[in-house]
Amino acid sequence: MSELVEILAGLIAVIFIFAPHEFAHAFIAYKCGDGTAKMQGRMTLNPIKHLDPAGFILCAVAGFGWAKPVPIYPSNFRNYRKGLFCTAIAGVVTNYIIAFIAYPLYLVILNFVYYANIDFFYANEWLAVIVRVIYYAFFFIYAYGMGIVVFNLLPLYPLDGFRVVESLTREVNPVRRFLKNYGMYILIILVVESFLCGVIQRYTDIEIVKYFDILGYLQWFAVNIIGYPISALWNLIIDPQIWLEIVTAF
Image (cartoon, rainbow, N blue to C red):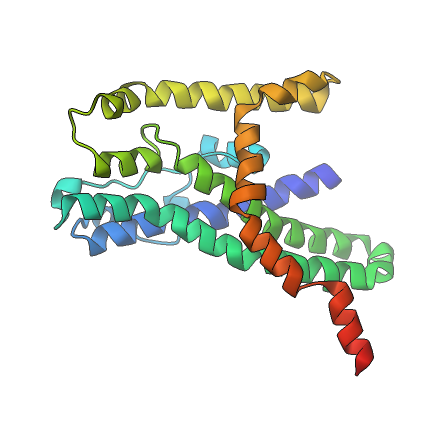
């Protein structure tokens, strides 16, 4: 049951990660002069317009994935470099903001709804499952959102990080050309390698495999380093012990 709860929560979380991410790309591109995404119906929060089935499932189970790329034609931007840069980072900035909002909601539901009424939920199993799905979903919006921020900023074509490189370099730059020509292959190798490591760890006792999970390290870095300001701040503010002392004092 616990595994099913986590999978369902992961699927819910991915919707709240990818739809705003792609909407942000489309919206900023439109503001910078390229209306292509709007004309193709991609400037919307409707997840059906943005989700790619394979990337959706992979993100739900592994924390990394992708959505349908928003069509962008940089030649339409009023300022090519500025427009390309702002459009490229719009998605990850949006994910960071959403993660900042989701983490405290996770803490509140976990500490002040679930644990505060644990006896009630022991007696009402299905209500407990629903609440667990909700707080797991908020946690995954935070954790997967951080993963998407770091993953998308890898300078590999066609990720957002490559668009950032593209906005800051000239077309003849050899590094940029290498990342464009071979970025997709490197990306596929990383995703497949991480997926296989995850499967082996889940269904075998081969502990050494975890040391070869490159994207696993990336996810750890995303949550524990990039996401640390979010978790540290909200853990300090939403501390059940502190609030218990405040309530008791009154």
